[in-house]
Structures are given as structure tokens and as C-alpha cells.
Image (cartoon, rainbow over all chains, first blue to last red; front, side, top):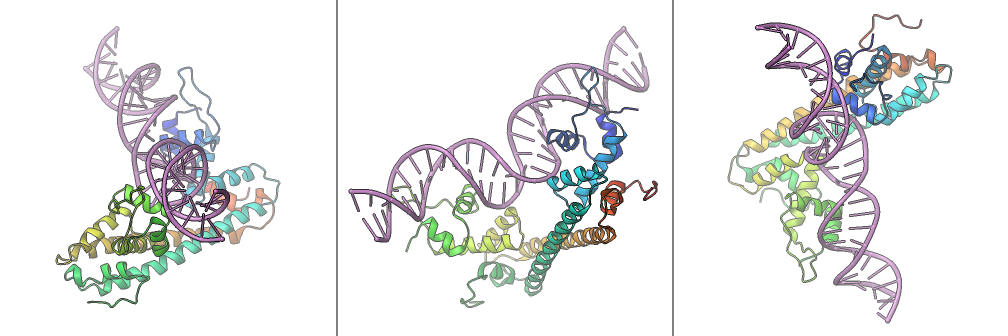
Length: 140
Length: 140
DNA sequence: CTAAATGCTCTAGCGACTAGAGGATCAAGA
DNA sequence: TCTTGATCCTCTAGTCGCTAGAGCATTTAG
């Protein structure tokens, strides 16, 4: 029935030190212990930890997860807050994708212009150096 | 000619503590000081710091920037390494965009399925909980 | 002359872990 | 029974790239 932290780790694919860390920050309740002070877990912890793991994989922050867990323990309450947490997270991801996409374009352009010659002719170095002071002439 | 750390900060849009931090980790050389121990900078530091700032904006890590800076100081050498740093960074950004895009799709689907009712019927909570153990039935 | 701004050093904090030391305990094979 | 290796425990410190704050000295503007 009850099993060790190593077994919990195997069942959830969450590393042992991470489980202990989650306990320390109160994301998991303090586990009961054996006589020799080892933590004991059951199915409830497997479920909770899977929930946490999947939320982390989706990029939710620990504090969001705290709220999501609290919500999931109040099944009769409105899921408005859940929806709102998920939506702001989605918006944040959109922002990140947009910013990475801009960045990628600039990088790609930079790289495509690199003549693979000497550093003094390299557009990559030049772009990095020049940005924001484009009054100076390029290439001598 | 020579100016203060505050002025350097204004000219590069890099915050004062960040400049001191860059000096501490050796990304900027230790600045000469006035009699009263204040740091003094010139145009060379403006250039170097702008290079650093722009590289950071493009998401390069500090260690990459160290190499890029070292390269830019060897203008006669081949820019092969520069190209290779930039390319692996581009690949990394591609990976991040791909992963965020997958994640966004999953989140969006989850949210669209949320009935805005009670938590016990909420697909968001359900998906977070169920992932990886889909043998269990959905919704009772 | 004074008050605000700027500078200095040093330490500690952020988020979400990860690594390592140093020691206890457990399970399995000889 | 002994031993070996795996697992467990706690504690501290490190990662990255800053950021914040304490407590003090100096500069600058009015």
C-alpha cells in the first residue's frame, strides 16, 4: 500500500530531490514517516504529483499550481479562477513566442549575411556591436 | 572624456548594478578609479557594453558573449566560431518556439473545453490531473 | 551650507531546482 | 551471518543573471 520516495519518483517521473523540495516549499504535504524516518506515500500523492508535473510541463509557475491544486480540492466552486489562471498563462506564452520569433528573424538575417570570412568582415559581430547607434558607417 | 558609471548607464541603457555585476564576473574589465574610488569609463566601454546588451537582448548567454567579445577582438581570425555560436543559439530558439507552440495548443484546447461551470466539471483541472494515465474514464 | 543625488562595498534574494557531503538503513546474495 | 550496494536522511551550497537593500562616503545643485 504505502511506498517509498524512490517508488513515488518512479511512478511520477519526478526526481527524488525535487519531491523533497516540493515538500519543503509546501507544494506537497509533509509525508508520514517510518520508524527509521523514511517518507511514506500512497496513491493520493501520486495523483497530486502528476498534477504538479503536468502543470510544470505546461509552464505554470509554482504559485499558479498552488492555486490550481487548491481549486481542484473545491470541486463545487466555480472554475472561473482556473480559467483565468490558464488564460493569463496562455497570454504569457503568446508573448514569449512572439518575442522569440522576432529574435529568431533577427538572428537568422544576421547569420545569413555572414560571409564566413574573417571576423573583421563578419556581419554578426557588426550587428551586435552596432545596434542602436546605426549612424556609424558599416564596413569601414 | 571620462565619465561615471551613471553616465555609462544612461548611454547604454544598462543599469548601474548590472554594470558592476558585469565587472565582477569579468565581462567588463575593471575600470580605473578616481581619487575617491569612483569608476571611470570611456567610449570603449560604451561600445563593449552595447555589444553585450544587444547580445543579451538576442538571448545569448553570458559565456557565449564572452566568446563573441573575444572573437571581435581578433578581427583577422576566421569568423567560423562566431557563426557556430550564433547557429546553435538559433537552433535553441527554434526548439523553444516549437516547445512553446505545442504547449500553447494544449493549453488553448484545454481552455476552449472549459465549460465555465463548477470545478468538478472543469476540463482544465481534469487534463492537468489525467495526463499520462488516460486509461481512466473522463467525466464520471 | 545643505540636501539630494550619486557613488561605493557587501550581503542576500529571486525561481525552481540540482549537486554533493556525510551519515543511516535496507534488501539481496554468498 | 556478513557484506555490498542501493536507497534513504539532512544540510549546505551552487546554478543563472541579475536585483534589492543596508550603511556609508562623496559629489553636485541650489
